[in-house]
Image (cartoon, rainbow, N blue to C red; front, side, top):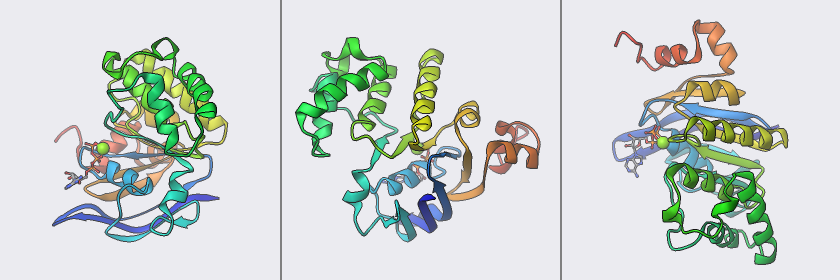
Length: 243
Ligand SMILES: Nc1ncnc2c1ncn2[C@@H]1O[C@H](COP(=O)(O)OP(=O)(O)OP(=O)(O)O)[C@@H](O)[C@H]1O
Ligand SMILES: [Mg+2]
C-alpha cells in the first residue's frame, strides 16, 4: 500500500526550481530517505508532504488524500521533526509537549501522561521541568522527536534527525526509529550521513538540484553502481572525490 504518491511535483521560488518535477512513492511501513547536497530540495519535499508548503505544480496525495483537498486531515495523522529547532523557549520541556498536543485537540489529561512517557522514550525525563534554553543542542533535538510523536502519528517525517548529535545520542535515536518502525510507523527522513541511510532506510531517493537522480534500496544502488552508498551518492550527484 502507498502512503504517499507524488508525480511531477514542482516548487518554484521565482526563477529557482527548488523541486523540478519529482516522482516518488512511499510505502506503508517503510523507511524512505531523501539524500542530497545542501539546497537539493529535501526540506522542500518534506514541507510539501507535511502540508506546510503548497507545491507550484504536480500532484501529491498522502494517505490517498490530495494535499490541497484536506491538509488538516493529513496533518492529524503525521508527526514532523523539523530541521530547525522551533520549540517554545518560554515553556518547560514537558509544557512544550502538552501545548503542542493542543493543536491535535488532545485533552491535557491524556497529553500529560503521554508526554511523560515520551520524555522517558527520548531519555529526557530528568529535564521535564527545565526551560528550553537550559537544554543542550542534542537534547533539543531529542525533544523535537518526542514532540513529533505526541499525536501517535502513522507517518513520521524527520528532517535531519541526528545532525549535531554525539555518537551515543545518534545510536539512541536510531534505536528509537527502529522501534517505531517495528510498530509499523512509516518513516521519511533526510540525512547527510550515509551510514544512517544505509542502516535505517529501506529505500532512498538521491536528489540533486531539485531532481531525483536515483531511487532504490541502498543495497540495489550499491550493487548497480559499485562501492558503498557514499561513493554511489558522490557519483550520482556529480561530486566525485576527484572534483
Ligand atoms: N522560502 C524560500 N524562498 C526562496 N528560496 C528558498 C526558500 N526555501 C528554500 N529555498 C531554496 O530552495 C532550494 C532547496 O532548499 P531546501 O531547503 O529544500 O534544500 P535541502 O536539500 O533541504 O538542503 P540542506 O541539506 O541544506 O538542508 C535552495 O536553493 C534554497 O535556497
Ligand atoms: Mg534541508
